[in-house]
Length: 322
Image (cartoon, rainbow, N blue to C red):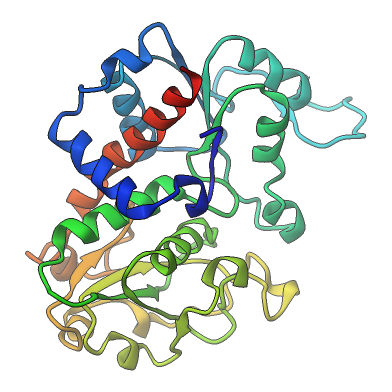
C-alpha cells in the first residue's frame, strides 16, 4: 500500500477488520517490520488523538518517529505555484517535501481545509503534492476532505460494540457548532459506512448535503427524529456548509439550529443506540453532558481504536516496503 486516503485503499474490509483484531490482541507482534525504519508525521494543524495514536502505533511496530509541526519552529511554507515569495514564507513546499522524504520511510500528513476555496480544498492540493514529490508512501492524518484513520477506527468500534444478528442501523447526524468546521470526518464516515455491512442514514438541515463522491447513494433524511428511529448507533458531528447545492455558501455556517443538539430526548427515539463522536467535542452544543457521560457513550473506546486503525495502515505500508 503506497497511499491511504480513501476506503478503497484498505482493500477488503472484512480482512482489514480481522487484521485490526489480530493487532489488538498483540500490538507488538509485527515490531520487526519497523526496525530501522522512520515515520515522519507532518502537522499543518493541531492534533491530540491523531498525534498520540499514530506515534504509538508506529512505536508498537518498531519504528523511529519524527514529528514536524510546520507552524511551530519550521520555516513558513508556501504551497502555491507562481507566487513571488517576497512575504513571510521562506520556503516552498516543493523543495521542502523531497527534503523531508530524504529523512524517512513513511510520511503521515495532517492539513485541514481552508474553507475559502472549495476547488483548492477538494483537489487535496497539499496532500497530493506529498504523494507526488516525496518519493515515500503517504497516509492521511486528516486532510481537507477526509479522515480515513478516524473512519476506520469508527468501523472497528461499531464491529466490537454490535451484538445484534442483523445489520445495525448507523446514523450520521449534523449538530450545531460555534465555528465553521471542515467536512473531512463526515465525508470519510459516510464513505466507510457505505462500504460496510450497515444500514446507513445521514441526517442534516437542508443545504448541508455532503459531496456525492463521499455520501454516494446513502439515504438522506432531513427529519432528524425520523432518522433516529430504530437507530443502533448515533454518530454526531458538525460540518460547515459543503457548498454542494450553493457553492457560494462553502465553508460558511448557514444553520445554527440548537434543536439538532443530541440530548436524552433525541436518544430516546433510538433503539438504545450507542453514542459516537470523533472528539474533541463541544459539550452542550454537539451533545449534552448526560448523553456523552452515559453508559451508552462509546467515545473513549472509539478514540482508543485510533491506535489500532493506524497500526493496520502502517503495518501494510511497511510490508509493501519489504
